[in-house]
Length: 305
Ligand SMILES: Nc1nc2c(ncn2[C@@H]2O[C@H](COP(=O)(O)OP(=O)(O)OP(=O)(O)O)[C@@H](O)[C@H]2O)c(=O)[nH]1
Ligand SMILES: [Mg+2]
View 1: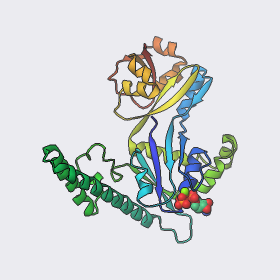
View 2 (view 1 turned 120 degrees about the vertical axis):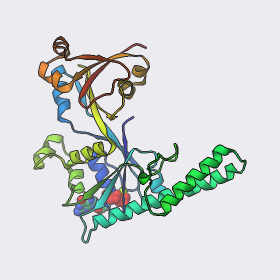
View 3 (view 1 turned 180 degrees about the vertical axis):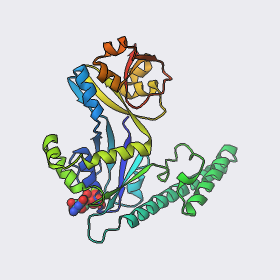
């Protein structure tokens, strides 16, 4: 599954505009919008041309934009991996720093209410006297006290209990929408043009590449590649995960039948010109399931089903 990013922000801050700029999907204001945001990576095209790929597929983030504000809207974000906070920096009298504070407070309040409801339920269940349930009550009480002091759960050294899905532990990237940050309205309009026309219009690279880069950093993601003639593709993976995890990203069957994995650095492949030449030059390694994938690895998983 691709990494999922929720767009949060105060009403009218430009969330849907940012969604459209990122996904080219034409999201509408009053609905929940879900789309894929391709991630530009100059390495991908170079790897693809070396192997003569017929199809080139960039890595993508799943982006979610929901209308409205308040608890229900934020509740939709609990299952996602990261938050992208859109701040109005375009309108007259805009106060992006103040809005970010307001937004952080909203996330905190949403977590407090969420933990409070869990606690109520846990207290009822714990009446049976089950020590495990009582420990759960104590833990939730600790979390609630922490939130009531106005502190996000990311400040606690301990991981929150599994299944709680707090908002205030999620990586958050703040994005100023306006001249001081990115011009989301312009980017959304450019997203409707063919890539070359959009590039010709921009002075530099798309401001959205920077957004993707910051999300990568916040979540600690790396990119790996699969490079065949049929399709050459970039994928994302959390740093520290293994070749088996990477295989599962590509296809569950490939993970299930994993035998071993051939690994070439992307720049070795480009420099040497083919898989075969890289192998000959001793630049291809054979790795097992536990190999920790590195940014820029080109993987070829050997598997049987
Ligand atoms: N000038 C300017 N206007 C913008 C920019 N971004 C968004 N807008 C305008 O601001 C209004 C609100 O934008 P939306 O993207 O719908 O904002 P939203 O946060 O999704 O709003 P709600 O979901 O309705 O709360 C629209 O009229 C946009 O055209 C920008 O960067 N510059
Ligand atoms: Mg909207």
